[in-house]
Length: 313
Image 1: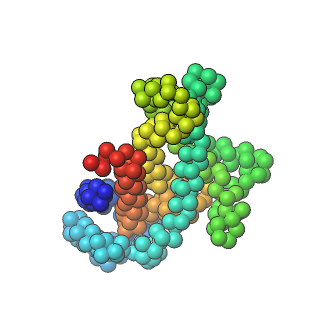
Image 2: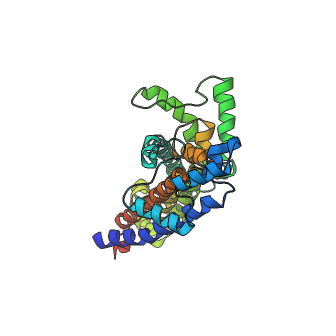
Image 3: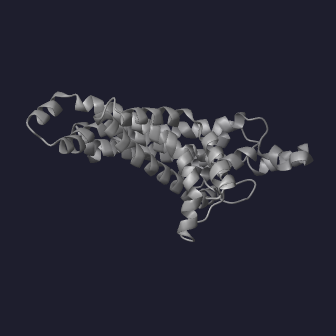
């Protein structure tokens, strides 16, 4: 098991290295630079040269990259050019909001999707199966921003049940915190739940049709035990894959939702960094989200090994 985990870690290292290269050079393809955004209408070439020299932007791109990545390997992600705040500090301040949004959205999706997908497979071609298929189609088709906007119009502006935006820490006021998170969680979790539900239904149908399930049913094994203990466990391996991928997408896909609901998370931080051409901050957030994605997939691989011992060998 230790060798299995170490192998996955060694595979993740070149992936993160490649992402750092893409993050560094991709942000520089956008017209303008940090200095242009800082000076704005007061842009002056002499001042611009002084600032570029101060932030090391006058050096060749490869030199800038190696300086940046060597600092990152020492735990120094640089400073924001607009706030002079260390990048890692800015990320850590916003991280709890994004983590809470991601975890709650994923839990919301799993709690709905796995039972619904399993029951739809067990009761194939019944009303609940048709409802599950309809939910999957609608959930995948509706854009998150549209669903978020409709919920704000109905649940907040029309009915006044929930706040339209803002954030309150769970430790300050748990009830207010959950009220702030209800609509963002539904907006993000619906599409994820639809994907997980469809995969659960598909894999459950495949497993239920296998010979060992038919044999166990013929021997008189209770249907509830057969389905929920034996069939579901074997059906969960591809579902875990989808959950891991979707968790990574949730971490990286909070930009729009955090902007709509004014949630001070990493997604909104990245959007502000793009607007301000804040290279250090943007590179740091991209690399952090990518690292979170890789770590989540590492955990998925470990869960694989527990669900299916054959994978360990």
